[in-house]
Image 1 (tube, rainbow, N blue to C red):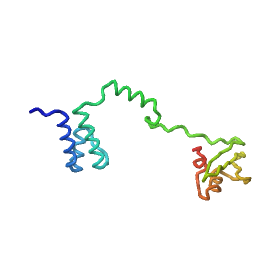
Image 2: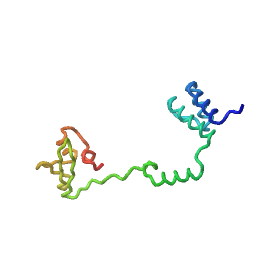
Image 3: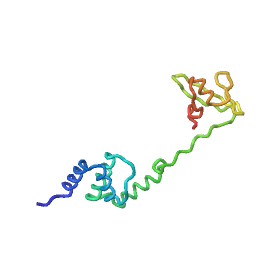
Image 4: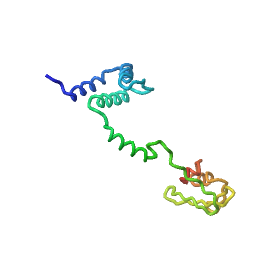
Length: 146
């Protein structure tokens, strides 16, 4: 009686559960051609299961891989690029708004690094955030400009 590919893969996958960490690492090296880094048995079993299925049943064809690559090339997050940070405007009159605990707060840039909030002058946006929350905050982070 001939055993089909799916049955063989199922047996191989079931066998992963009984392997020790050292055996999993050796199997990883055998299937991937390089040693795994620091990891845990659960993650190794998932990687090995995927690789066993890929070898036995086939992976992506070239056309599908090209489509996924083109999609990833257009995605800044897929390329691990950070979106550009918003620049803190230092132009006098610029207003920074934030709703905190249901109340809208507004700080206005006066120039020379000074800010006005509730008719008081503050030396930094962080000082304004501190006045609003009662705790130390990075002002740019609090107002969403960092």
